[in-house]
Image 1 (cartoon, helix red, strand yellow):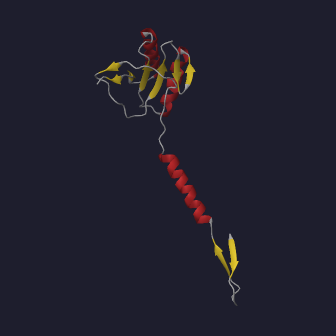
Image 2 (cartoon, one colour):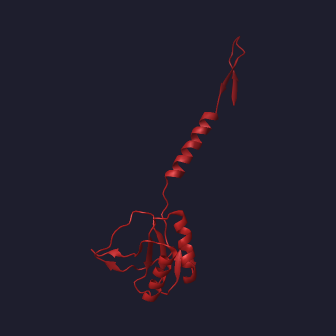
Image 3 (cartoon, helix red, strand yellow):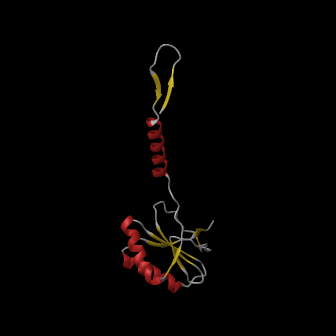
Length: 136
């Protein structure tokens, strides 16, 4: 609170209340935090296979990455094939309607992709798909 005295015969102080300014600042901060969208990534750079029928998904999917060496990534951390089901179940608790997208390298082993799809379906995922780049 800032107080100042006027010159002259009046002894009443002038006050500037800072509380509404601070409240407004916090409201703006909360607004920007709530409206910001974050991009989820698998934490793995892969060469996607191309397909003419590739589509863009707008919903927030659960992303699982698979490298050509067979390493599986989810939420920027490596996971084992045995923990895919538990991780997908945990993600489905937050968003039950989310689909799972497997971002696999085009040189990855097909058997590993099938195992990941199987684990996702056992976890309760209704839509499991494989990411591809659109063939122009």
